[in-house]
Length: 300
Image (cartoon, rainbow, N blue to C red):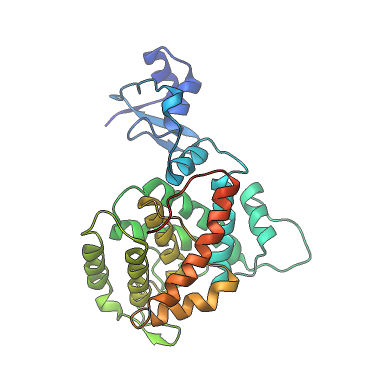
């Protein structure tokens, strides 16, 4: 496929270059992609139809997130999720960056100069996690695939000290056995088979309830397919599937951490532990939605 520049396409369509860039940012030109700061547009692309603004009011959280992401909106729900989700998910896994430091990295793409000593991996994984959330928003409407799961891990762990270890596979399944919470997980040689089996079963139904999403999460964490990063990838997948199925998302913070782990451990015996923990976290997320005046559906 041959690609042309924004300037060439603007001349061909007899419109402003800014309009063409906006079409690209909004995802309205299929297969257009960025190289650095330059948009590459398929030569055969058809100009998008003009849309009546009154008809473009987003009606789901996913719609709003896509719109705010494309428009680089600051201070909205997209901004809020990036900071809250990244800080809490990383913090659960031992990151020592504070909430303010996480916010500062997101908002300025820099590290404030202090007398503190930082773990470079904490900083790299924080920046990478912001990109992972963007991937989740971009791919939320699509069915869950093995490739997407691996891609999330590749982005999350890119450039970390783990990525320089011979036995660690960035974007690939573990080579060494590992445990989670003292429990044995799937053996490395069986991971691919078990992940594929899990995805096949999960993707059989089109619309997922919260319990079905949680059940997938528990099974994913018990497989523990990666050498490290399983919890964060798993929670990113939770976010994706909530957005896809119009279920109010939830963010597990430090106060819920032990209840969350207990819920994962006891799921097969008593589903209420994990469900109630996530419903509590969901209530906090609903407070965010209420503040930003975003409607949501109550779980039945």
